[in-house]
Length: 252
Image 1 (cartoon, rainbow, N blue to C red):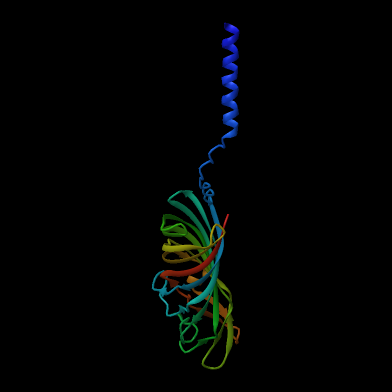
Image 2 (image 1 turned 30 degrees about the horizontal axis):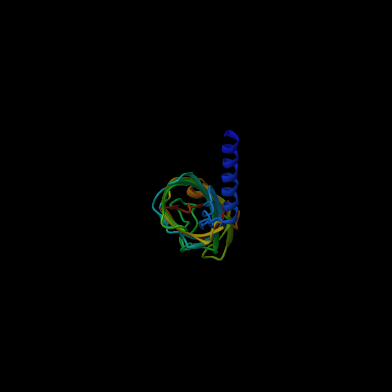
């Protein structure tokens, strides 16, 4: 009896297996592949074209000399500290033509250069570097905007200047320099023109200036054509710095 029962069970199992092999399996459901992982940006590094305005003011010393607006260049780095906060180290270099009116470097001393003296065309070179903290808002998959605030240190270099007296006598005033501290406040916008690789960005900043010092802001002396010491006035100080930059960044 047991043998018959075992045989019947084996026959039934064999038949079930055979039918299962004859019937085709239903196709697997189609499932969309998962999206690729998003680029995990942490650092952006790039270069800038800069438009720089630095007006003179009656700050450290009063003076009629002024800087002309200048086209400069810069480099920057954007380091993501948090999802919403980045650190922006920066460097800006600019060369400003100087507008120096007649008699601008005269002083009240008896040995002063003449108030009718003129100064040959001259250009001041400048650079500034610093860092800004930038709370950042993701506007879309590829666009971001930010506000920024920071601190920077800069330097001006003034080349040897040639003074011409009303008599036609010509003499030179040696090189001078000045340093300053700025506190830039800015707003910026960036867009990925090549997703995950290249970003174009624009930023505008305004920076009040403090801590100006150096030989450019102090009276100087020069030896004129007759071998006499002449007193030369300071060049002047700036009130603020306004910078607009347009740059490209590599996403690293």
